[in-house]
Every structure is written in structure tokens, then in C-alpha cells.
Length: 273
Image (cartoon, rainbow, N blue to C red; front, side, top):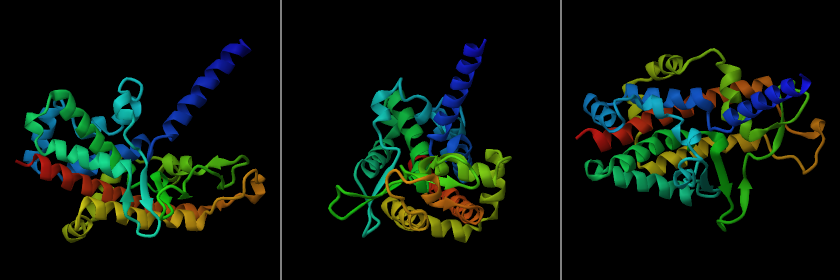
């Protein structure tokens, strides 16, 4: 009996860890997709849904996380965005993958069904990932030396065990600040409060400019929570306290707003024709 209970607990813990390993978590990605959907033109929305079997883009918001084993080729696409620390400009595979999908979908009517679908799924998911501060890695100007990456432990609130900083941003920040919100609550509370002028400001510039903006905003999470020395005791780890969680919650809300509005801009440009 004890062995059965242990097995059940192990599965439950594994499921929790799997959930936390996703940028923003399931609700956050769904919120970004729904904010984007609320800003789609009727024609773009209709054309997209024709391509994805009549479903909403919200339905596929976390597809890239849940189907890694079945679609190994697509799992190789970057979920973390790399930036030059000095310029804050995107570098490497993430921005290359993003442009590849946009370029392919610019001629979406001539793609096969599977290629068209997966590139839509990719855009819906990774535009959100690339706006998540925990999915931002900074490199020194040599392009090979990592300056900042969230793969280190912190003290989170009053917990008695260390928590991985990447996991803090993969759901904990949202759950702590908006634990009872559904993805529709995010759209109601965040998107509906934006003016058209604010949305227009968010989509000024290029996709590369948007990611540079996301990187600039995200740098604060490393400045306020620097990495502790290797093998540091719990008491020596940087403390993400309640005040910091409040501040980071506001940052997360802004990044979710921007991700949703910018995703809508990309999809409108591709499918409103």
C-alpha cells in the first residue's frame, strides 16, 4: 500500500514539475493567445481557424510544450530567447525560428496542412515564451559566454527549500499574484484596460525591436535577484520576497499584454488577406 501511495505522489510531483517547466504556465500561454484573439480582425480570425480545424488559437497555446516527444523536429525550436547583453538585440536560433515561421506563413495558402498548422502553433506559443523574463538568456558580446540565465536557485517567499528561478517565472509569479484567474480574466483585466493608442505603441517597430524591448524589460529580474555562489546555503540564496513578487507580477502583466497584442499584429499581417 505504501508503495502505491508513493508511486501516486511521484506521478503527481512529476506532473507539477512538467507544468512549471513551461514558459508562463498553461494559463499564461492561454491568456496571451486569448488577448491576441481579441485583437484579431474578423477575416484573420476566420482564416486562421480554417487552418486549424475550426479551433481557437487558445486551444493550441501550449501545444508546443505538450507534444515534444511526438514532434521532435519542432521540439528543437527554441523556447528560450537569446540576447546580446550590450545591445539587447536578439541573437541565435530563437529569432531565426521566429522569422522562418513568419516567412513561411506569408504564403500560407500554398503550404501543406501540417506545415501550416505547426507554424501557427509555433507562433502562438513562442511569441509568449520570448516575452517571459524567465525565458530570456543574455550572452556577453562574444556570443558564447552566458551572462544571465535563470537556471539557479532562490528563496521564494517563506519556503523552507530552494526553488529554481526559472520555475519562479514559469508559473509561480502568476499563480502567486493571480491564483484564481482564468485566461479570460487576464484578457478582461489586462487587455480591456489598454487604449488603442497604447496598443499602437506596443507594435511600433519590427519583431526584432519587440524582442529587444522584452529583453530590456527582463534584465531587471537578474539585477534584483543575482545568482548566488555555487553550493550556497538556503540562507545565502537571493530572496524573492513578497514586495519583489508584487513588482514582478506587474512586470509579468505588462509582458503578457505586449505578447498578446504583438502576436495579434503578426497574425493579422499574415492572415487578414
